[in-house]
Image 1 (cartoon, helix red, strand yellow):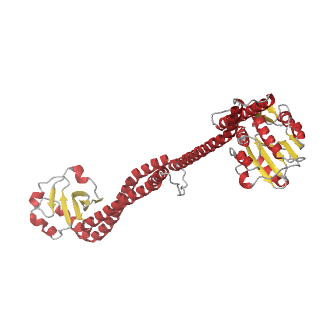
Image 2 (image 1 turned 60 degrees about the horizontal axis):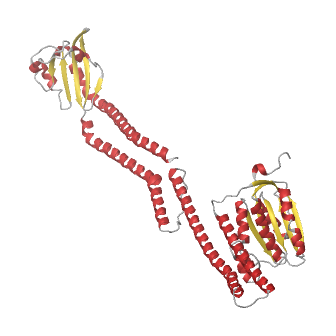
Length: 496
């Protein structure tokens, strides 16, 4: 239940429960009172019978001297009182009082005749009023008042019980409300504050978040989501910072060699030594080559940085897959033949794609040139663009069929496979990191490039909404695969 509705319901219940409890206690008290009154009346009925018989004597209802009522004095006791009235309302006798003073008291007719024959049960007394007849004529009315002694004696005990029950009820109600508030509000707030303090101190939260479906649960989930997002952002910033440090160090190292070469050749060209025309031209070509190499390094660094920016957006265009990739991959067949490499090419797609042609050409160029460098002479290089609803080509590494099917998962695969030495597993994991290729070049395992080629290719794939992976097996070679999404309305050519 939502916390807002829970609080509204709780407040309503807290307001209504005391009223209901008070009404219940009042009803219970009245019920007990009625039951006790009946019991007391039954017990006193035996005492009332002789009194009623004596008071039913018509001769008593006249103005007499006190001696005429002497017999009534014997009926008096501490619990029963009675009064005798004439039909006119004059009181002729009252127990425990003077007869002469009784005659001075008069009751109005309405009051005198009210509640005849009805037993009146009051908190302290019972009262019964009856008329007295003689030969069909009303000669008087008597009223008997009985004190409820047993009831009055138990008032103190009953009051104690009622107050105890009321106090117990309010204590239970207060405790229940506190427990519910603690469970629904205080405990989650304390839990959230502890997690916030732990996060502020940089400590990892180890407690399991309780499953809740109210606002506090949403707040806890949102805080954890925010916490995870901040941690991931911090991790990304740290990773990017390390990448930048590595890139700066690697770039400094890469630039040092051509700069030293430029410095040496420039010194020779500007020196006193007389150079032949061909020798001077050769030195100048070396200088220009080093300058071009440095320009390429800087250009690729700029491209890598731009592709990593979240603000950079590519201008995508819609292309027909088969035509575009036939043209793109076909340009590499002649290059492979000059390198004495057999090329197997498969373009199996009739999809439409949203791509940035220049960047996608850069991606395939990096992958294919890398594959050409590492394919042995007279080896085989496979190039393929396989849509999600087409079978994979036969020339792929046999053990990768099922894994590639799972990897493409509704997307098109751009596959580049070469026959060459396998990449060690520990290096394959880091193959898309900046300057890993350059490190491999120094180890004489891989060659060429500025060390950013595969990193740029993967970022291009990500910018297209896809991904890139690489597999390498001894005896087969290396396969690079790029996932290219098939976007909704662009999946099929209009009209067929």
